[in-house]
Image (cartoon, rainbow, N blue to C red; front, side, top):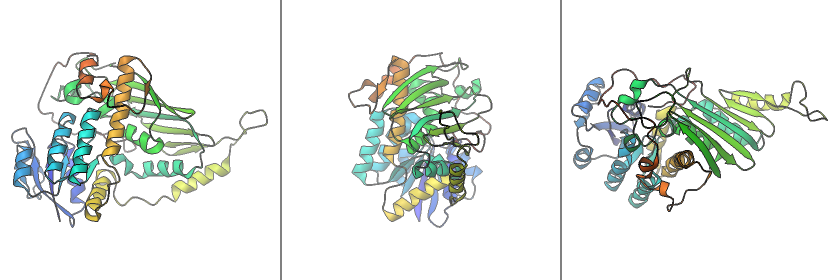
Length: 389
C-alpha cells in the first residue's frame, strides 16, 4: 500500500484526490500540505473519509510522514524546488503541468530523479483519453502518410478576474500566460503525436486582459520536415472550440474524430466522393480502439502506481515534461525576440536559464489585483477539450 501526500490544496488537487481514490487497494492518501493557513485542513473537511493529516509546511510533511508518492499541485514557480526536495527525500513524485517555468529548473528536477532512482512523472492527463489515443493510433498506423499540416486550437476563455489570483498574471510567479499554463496540454499532445519540430516562430499578444503582464493569445508556426504546424494558444476564445486537425499525404483526421481523404483526377483536381476505402479503413481503426480502463488523471496516476510497483519508467516522465516546456520556451523566445528559433535549445541559450523570461518579456499590462483565494468551481471546458486548471 503506497502512502501518498498531496502538496497544494487548490482546485486541481481534487482531480488528484479522486484519481487516488480509484485505486483503494494500492494507495492511501495520508497527508495534504498547503502554505496558506487552514487551506489543507479545509480540503480534508471536504473529503472526510480520507483520514489524512493537514500540514502548512510541505517540508514538515516530508520530515514527519513516511511517504512513498507525492502529488505536487502548487503554482508553477514552486514545482522545481518541491520536486527536488521530495525526490532527494526518497519520495516518488508526480508534478502538475507545466513542469517548471524554465529548462534550467526542468533539468535540475530530472537530475534529482536520476540521482534518487525514484519515479518522476509530469501531468499530461490528456494522453489518457480515448479520443486522443485514437488519433495517436491513426497517426502511428501510417495510413494517412506523411504529415503536411497540423492545426492545433487550444482555445479557452477566461474573464478579467481570473488573473486576480495572486500567482497568476506575472511572468515571475506564473511563468507565462496561456501558452504555458493552458496550451501546455495541446503542446504535449503535439509532441506526442509528431515529435519535436525543427524550427519555431511566433507572435504574442494580450488582447483582452489589461490586468495581467502575460500574454492571453499567441500564434506559433512549427516546422516538421517538409510540413508545418500552427498552434493557437488563447484565453480569449468564446465557445472554447478546441480542435486538432492533421492533414496527411493521403487523408485528414481530427479530434473531435472526423476523416476525409481525396483522390486526384488526371488534372490534379479531386475526384468526387474521395477515397472511400481509406475513409472506411480509418473509421474501422477508430471503432476497434479498446477503451482505456482509467481516463485523465486517474489514468496517469494509475500508470505511476504501476511504474512504482513494477520498477519501470512511467508512461510520461520528466523528459516529456521538459520537452513541452522547451517548445513553450521557444515560442516565447520567438515572440519576444522576433526571430525563428531552432530546436533543441542549448544550455548556453539565455532562455534556458531561470529569470530570463521575466527580464525580457514585455509587460503587456501591470497586474492590478492579487487575492489569495477565489471561490467557485474550476471550469475546464467542454468534454472534448483538454482540461486545465
